[in-house]
Length: 194
Image (cartoon, rainbow, N blue to C red):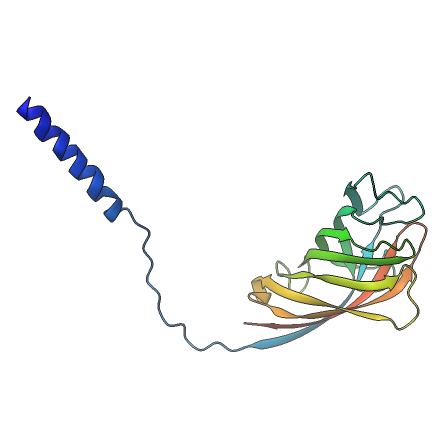
């Protein structure tokens, strides 16, 4: 019986000591100086929810907010894999794609606004393999905005050449269709990164 008690106490001691040695440990060191860089990009973004080969899909919609007169009813969640091109035409040279989600927020069927998350990745050129992340609210606008209407959105991160990026993207519609929801936008980006 005494040997069993000693064994039991030894087990309790081992179990009590083990968590002390198994704790997470990390050493914090002071980072060296970093040189901030600024990069400006210009490309065209094509959001195409209609036709035989759409790049944007409705993935969820509340049945109480259906509005058949709006291309993007309130509360609709979309996934996207939209092409980025060098020129305004959808058939021009593709430089990357924007993948992400957006949630339509306008209760007015003639207007569009959304919370937008997308990763803009580049597949050719100097920034091949790099991307930046945009997480922002797309400001309220008409489905067919007037010429010169510019919308600003926030850049909150990046990878590759754009690691730790911050900045902003300016969107200007080059073409849009209120019935189908198709839109092409010119995007001017200013990135601050290391």
